[in-house]
Image 1 (tube, rainbow, N blue to C red):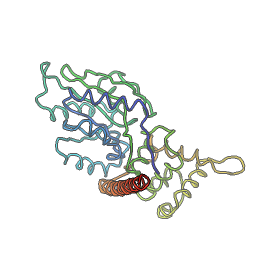
Image 2 (image 1 turned 120 degrees about the vertical axis):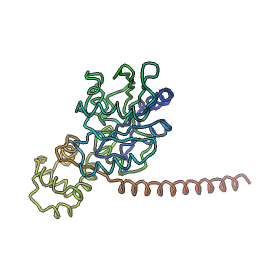
Image 3 (image 1 turned 30 degrees about the horizontal axis):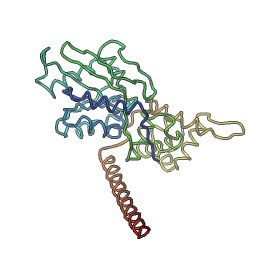
Length: 316
């Protein structure tokens, strides 16, 4: 399943970040703790290259507590990078961001050398909620729809600490299909860019293998976990539709409604605490994607050669 979403305002955001980064000391990238690599934007990494980065695994209260430490270790092993996990609605841990930035740029203190921080992330990752928590005021609009923040905002957190918020941004082409599925499931992608039934089934395919007990409990499936894990994805969605009353006239199942239920339950945390990837899984997905990209480039090169030979024969 190929999921792509890069509307016009994201082009403007890319340009704005390219200009703003010249005056920035530290970049905070907010990630979804349930998909810590899939929610990391490679375009942002390119735009902010060379700047110390604080990776914040947000919504840790929704993520699998047993998996989050591995992701923190994975990011903390990178040069010029620190990683922390937090729940953006919790005031006390949110203030840890300021100290994390101070550690990454210790010389930026006082009015003569104020700390200048840019906060970035994919849509619907919780930036606006975090900023409101940090500033103790409702500085930024919040909501559960991707793309609410549409322009840059400047927030003063301390006398010598300035934070610039930017709209959520994806990247022009998501080459790892598993990442596209997870971004859509989390709500980071506009609803018109994907098929909800397909995304819900892709989500269930992962959950039934790693969190079957949570599915049994949430949807009262009354079947052994092993049996749930063995179901085909569409069979599992059918079962959830029946259990949740997503039935139309004539007894036909409303799979669209069932898919919406599953996705809403993931986003709200109603399914339970889940993390939809491990470092090893993501590494395997990325390697496979790079291999496909290399094959694609090779096919294009061969096609260009064929076109050139044909053009030469035609011109003779």
